[in-house]
Image 1 (tube, rainbow, N blue to C red):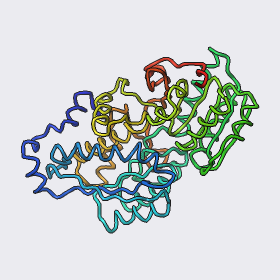
Image 2 (cartoon, helix red, strand yellow):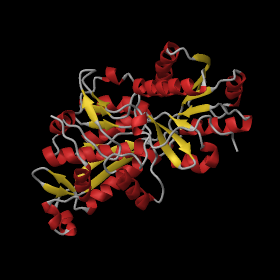
Image 3 (cartoon, rainbow, N blue to C red):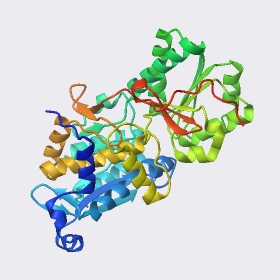
Image 4 (spheres, rainbow, N blue to C red):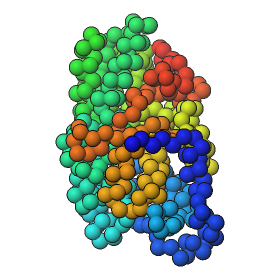
Amino acid sequence: MAHRMDRRQFLRVAAGATATALLPHSWARAQARPVRIGFAISETGPYAIGARLTQIPNYYLWRDEVNARGGLLVRGEGRRPIEFVNYDDRSDIGTAVRLFEKLIREDRVDLVLPPWGTAMHFAVAPVVSRLGYVLLGITVGSLRIRELGAENFFALLPQPDSVTISIVQFLREARERYGYNRVALLHVADLHGVEHQTAIVPLLRRERFEIVEDRSYPLTVTDLSDVLRAIQARRPEILVCFNYPADGNLIVQQSIALRFNPPIMILGVGAFFAEFRQQFGENTNGIICHQAAWSPKLRVPGAREYYEAFRRKFGRDPDYAGSSLVYQSLKMLEQAIAEVGLDQRRIKEYLERHEFNGPWGPVKFERGINRAGNYVGRPNRLGQWQPSGYEVIWPPEYATARPIIPKPAWK
């Protein structure tokens, strides 16, 4: 059975139009026992940049919106205020695992929210699932999700197979129009980077692209100038990077210094942050990001409303990829709890059976790949910085602007 939220339904959920809202909110909060929601996430360490920009703000935006309406609507109980129980995992996997166990065993939270990053999800998801809790994972990209066997874990981002297919489809069309065929690959040497690089190479070869260079670098890299010089010497027309925010910034900084400016430059995590635009200004124009592009211009329910609510609360733009998906995942949990309550098994079954729509776009899950649910929806979207802002450029049915090719010269 599929259930789609149309625009009016989404806005009605967002407005909290329920009978319990007729009670004074202060009185209702005083009487109701809080819903305790726990998470451990990277507030410090190398993963903190992504966590602070993509996930943490949306957790607080959603909590404050819900509490302003009198609390979370729980089937059979009315509205209950949300109370966060949260810790800093310090970007350390062992710490994250211990903290999620503490949240469930000692703090006895009602729900848990995910950490940031693929490695953290891989460590935490089996533990959370074994303890009987549902986990909606956002910032995780790995084909090895199929091997986790975490029954209560749901992955929402397009995974490396979907991401790399969309990149190669886009490049194939660009080649037909512009003739660019020489590709250089660059990836961070962790699970995220290795899996995307492994997935894209056979696709490029199948489409007869010429791979002129294929390089990796460690997560803790502080200088990529020699690597970029080596790539530059191979005269690629296309550069595809699988990176995180800090190393993505380094790639751009040192490419500018080297005057290395391939006609098509595709980056990964971090290139979709508004802060990326603030840091590099006009030099972002023409840079493409392969990771789940989003825009408030998308014709999906609540996209503009979400963007404006985020701007009002934080005085800045959300990121143009996973941020809206984080928020939508919380709305999905909210919808499930209103229908079935806080029982983890029933929440899991509700998520499996229904299809959702919201500011990110259509989301549904499939089973059969493994025991965990995996996001299945529209193709992965590519975005590009343009003078008008961040635009979705692929696939065509989602595009908010045509791509700018070749990339403009560095300023």
